[in-house]
Amino acid sequence: MTGWRLLTIAIAVLVVATSAMVVHAAGRSPDAPAITFFSTYATITASRRIDPGFRIEELTVRVQIEPADRLIRVDYHFVGTVMAERVGNVYNWAFPPQERLVSMTVDGEPVPLTPAGGGEEIHGYNLHLDSLRRPLVRGRRFDCTVSTQWELSAASAQEPCIYLDLTVRLCELLALYSGSDRTFRMLVTVPPGWRAFWSGEEMPGRKTAGGTTFTWATVVCPLYNYPLAAGPFHPVDTGLAGVQLHLLQRDLGQSEQLRSVVRETTSRALEIANRFGLPPLPKLDIVLCRTTERWLGGKSPRGVIFMEVGGHFDNELDLLAALISHEIWHQWFPGTVVPAGSVSFMWLSEAMTSYFDIRYMRNAWPPFKAGLPYPSQYVPPEHSIEEVCNSSDLLKRHKLQAIHLKGSWVVHMLQDLMGEKAFRGAVREFFGDTSGNPVSVEDFQAICERHSGIQLGWFFDQWLRTTRTPRLKLADLRIGRQHGQWVVYGAVCDRGDAILPPVEVAVLRNGEKIATTRVVLPSPDSATGIRRAKFTISLPFLGGTVVLDPDFRILNAETAGLSRSVASLVFVQVGPWAAGFLLVSAIAAVLLRRRRRRTAPLPQQ
Image (cartoon, rainbow, N blue to C red; front, side, top):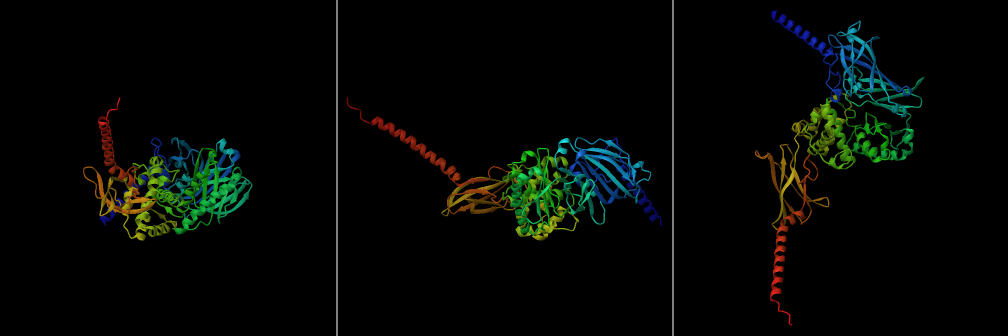
């Protein structure tokens, strides 16, 4: 009995200590403020996450757009249950700069709010929950409404279009969501004659005194895009079933051109997705939103593509086609998948999207040949994909190189390693998942291993979690004769120790391989850190170009020494002999001419 009593006392002490830690985290002193975020998404985009100690359900978001007042009013209403011993004050709850916290009530009782610091990109509020007459203690259910305002600039108010991104705030709340039906409701009230676009199952619009209220039932997905667009949009038929383009009055003059771009790009994406066995898109709204800034961007939650276009892009429809080409693949990546963790979200979404956009839509692999928005060459980032995905600062500085370029090349190498059939099967199974359960990179790896029969742990560790980057190039190239044939001799060199597949070297003529070989690189030399493998290639005739990795199977940071024409090899080897022969011949000719002059008879007087 004594042992049981000691165990009971130990457990009690542990519970009290844990409760004290929870209260301390939730009630941090304002003298040492910490930006409070609830979601992994917000952790990536701004700062660290703090659990406030409660869970929510029955979330309803009401948006009231009032352009005349230059205001957008947003109410977040939910039922909560306290999970901690007690929820204390929350300090420095961070908000985007455009969104201002107006009020908060708990069971109808106002919560005192005071402004707090935050920084240039965010500002915060202190929530004085300790002042409630009924404290938020473990097990208590409460009804809460958080009201905010989005203030529009005068220039924005003059534009007949409102584009609002609720991503961070909704991801905050949905990270705490524990509702049984896994859905929440979005209600948007717009002025008469306006339309509203959101991601989810759309309910019929209902006319009200203030205009029209549109309602959606949306599946809970903590890591997701939640933009909203509203304005007097006009529908334009694209000629594709279920795909509709929506334009403002000012863009109707270009409706035929825009319709053609959308139809051509979307139909190609649908054809490729069908080849991979990806789920069909029952409905797709493509909305052209006007912004007052010099900006071209896009968001693509499920069933919608938002194109944010500034005025200076009016005559650059090729850029709009590239934007749609990228954004439409987000309908499948992540699509219906609910990612778990930042690496899942960024790599399985952005990198997969970039790869399909470049490889299949533009037929322009490797990615640095694809043009905008990709740079002219790949520069290895000094941080791994996983590190970049988990740091807002690194993400801002290295997203293009680490995610779009390196990440898409990792997908390309994975496809080559697995084989086309196995890769398609894995993509179809993973991104066709409609269960709504969170999935991760590890889940994707397991599916890839099952379809390919290959252990891929080393691959995911090396390419996602390290900075290893090959620097492959050709070296010591020369040409000779062997058994009556022309033979190219050379070596493949690499500075690094990344695990690589056999490296192909080929001779190309007019884009066709006329000869090829593969080499396996050994371990790096202990003194130089360079590994080297020799090769020979027999040529059917003298001509062509020696090319390293002609199918771009391996991510390579080297930009020089990747190809060499056979003619240049011949010239380099024969050139010195030919030059010497010509030099000797020239000297002999000069000497002979002088001798002839000396021995020639003098002219008679």
